[in-house]
Length: 230
Image 1 (tube, rainbow, N blue to C red):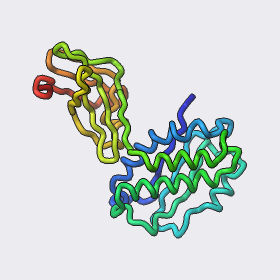
Image 2 (cartoon, rainbow, N blue to C red; image 1 turned 90 degrees about the vertical axis):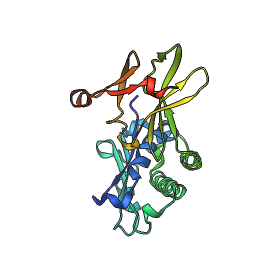
Image 3 (cartoon, rainbow, N blue to C red; image 1 turned 90 degrees about the horizontal axis):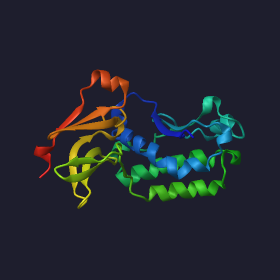
């Protein structure tokens, strides 16, 4: 079953109002899937759920949101709510304050959906959001399941995501030693770090991309393991 896309959109083109928001958005797109997705009624044909941030909006558009979605199916499978950021200065918030703000706004969205959108009591969704707020926002995945064998050692390829960066690394299976390969912007992982496979030629490790666009216009990401692994 296709994942529901949980995302955040900023109405302003003045990007310096929300420095780092893209990283939070990308992490939440991943974190909200296991936290919320299975609690949503798929008969509503929901494909995307979105917070729209407006710095000049006086208040969250809750009543308008209800008019659009309460006991109705979303048009084209999209649920979105207009959120006011007029009273906050995103760039001056701490990491915990940013997490609090975003989770509280997701709670506004889900609290104001009608019960027919859920397979469980709505309070369970709110509880899941509160639990997520109190967790460390970090995800470690293995983008390529195949193991790397180099100099008689076996390594797992991992991508470690946080609100600060996405790090491509090797984890040596014998002692779990973490070996950094490269940092990326978290929000760019689906373009700059969208890897599907690797090739090892002597000491040279090359990652190939899964995207046709990357394959045509971007050279493989290459690392000299002799220089990296001690």
